[in-house]
Length: 398
Ligand SMILES: [Ca+2]
Image (cartoon, rainbow, N blue to C red; front, side, top):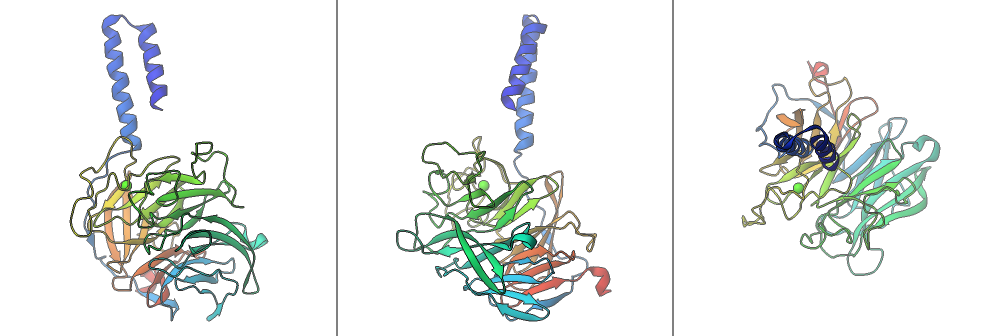
């Protein structure tokens, strides 16, 4: 964009003007270029405070008796598949919870475990289910994030295919990612956090960790991925410089993938994921170390894509949804984000890419891991120590 504008501008200046006008035209070109860059990468403003809503939503527990329900998705009949971080996968239908067999062995360390689950967009005809988890497979002690797919038939996972495995393994328990979403063009996106190795992984495209990845649905690498053909690059990488994205949506309205990710102390972010862009961690951040010491004074820089917004203090975001149904008119087209730290569901309203409202919904429900709009249009929320609850629209509780 920048190059095009510059060329057009200079050509125009060359043919159309005398000496004096030439410098004027040049000034216009420079101004235009700057505006364009800023428009595509504005520095975020401080968020408004999160407030309690005028009226709290009621909820009903749909699946109870769970410890850490990490991720879930809906089958075509509206029943639910849900992971327990500890390593079990359940199918919940008609009030009954059935354990699914054939689930991969997890590396049970720290934040690792059985993580996200997502059904193939055409699950009804092909039965493919995608799962992310921490895995010990491959060389070296410890584990790293893996992505598989398998067919779900008769409460069993079969025909397993290993699609991706982050390297190297590490015994660190931090930052495995990992969400899975699909776009409308036959890709899937998933994330791996920096694996507790922030000074080595996120800024290096020849290493896994601190990345958003893009694959074709069979696990192959799209030929138009941004780092295809670059020496030693992990060609599945779509964007880098991330810390630990644990919430991801495909924003149908904009055709973009959006993530929310944990910052250090302060500095959680929402990022609009763009091909080949660097999201800055740990070179630029709005956060600091947990002990209050400085990571960097830099909040932004010319090489880095700014977040859409950032949280200070951190809410520890997990799960992400954009409301599109008509069940909750006051939430429509807005964002929902789970908070592990403050144990509420954040409702965030944007206007022109700026945060104009933040509300704390379902306060005290528990550490929220995931949020999804079901095929029935209702909002479902996975909370630690509870399970999955359905948020009831305000008019239904009046
Ligand atoms: Ca960032």
